[in-house]
Structures are given as C-alpha cells and as structure tokens.
Image (cartoon, rainbow, N blue to C red):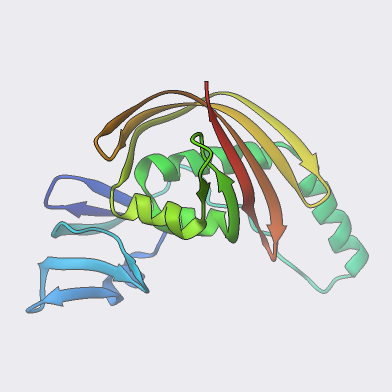
Length: 205
C-alpha cells in the first residue's frame, strides 16, 4: 500500500495513509493556488503552514490489519478469526504502526487506531478522550521527535489483546520538554473488521 507525503513551506513533512486524490479533493484554496492552501478533510485541520507538494510513495510498513469476510460458512470464518486473535505478532505490528503514527502525527492513522469512546489516563492522572488526543497532535500542542520501544508484552484475549510496552519519548508539550521512559498499557479490541484501542494508561518511570 502507499502513503501520501504532504510537504509544507516550513520544510516539515506529514505522512498519512489517506490517498493523494482524497487530499486534493478536500483542499481549501486561496484564490485557487496550491501553495496558498490548507489541508482540510472533514473537520480535521491538518496543518497551518502552506502546502508545497503532495506526493504518494510506497509505504514501508503494512497498514492496520483487517479481516476479509466471506459467506463460505460461518464456522470456518469464526475459526479463522479466532486463530488470528491468538497470534501476538499482529499486535506487535499494530503497536509499531501506532508508535509511527504518534511520531509522524499521522492524524488519519491515529483516528483509525483509536476507538471513538476511548478511555485513556495519562501519566498525570488526567482523562484523555480520542478528540483531545487528536487535537493535541493536530495543533502541535504535543510533538514527538522519538517514540521507541525497548520492551513489549502482549496478552491475547478472546477478541483482541492487552499490550504493555516500555516507550522512550523525546519531544515537546507546550513549553515543556518531553524526555524519558514511559509504560503504556493499551487494550485492543476487534471492532467490526479492524482492531482499535478502546482503553489505555500511561505511567512515567
């Protein structure tokens, strides 16, 4: 699959899984000029800098895993899904994709990964909703320059998994620098045909 790279006048590049054509169809122009545009898709305002270039490039990693449903017997379909759920490798990949989305501020990927009714408690004990998390990335209130994992434990469940990871973060939150190791707990659950994070917690070491 491909990913789309949006290059801004600041020199910054935003990577997203949204197709190039979808972005172009939702660009709000100033007097019809591309380099005067802001990317707006639905109610998501991606960037406040001028756009220099939009291009598609092969994605290095696969996108979130989805099940293809068929009508060739419900029993066989349930068996295949059960086998997939019991495989920790797919959640290792999902966690990797999630970390990449955090570091690159891929709003589209984060929107896909997070359930609408997400319940997340951060390292300060504050409750964070999905909308609050996306807004922080969208407005650059939180910016990560490094999101790396040194340890990952995966506990498969009937319809998903619980992941516990040790993450090193570097970045900026407002005027404060982010630097240190954190423990992230995420609850992944199969919602429809894809896995989403329905709950999570973060603690600073």
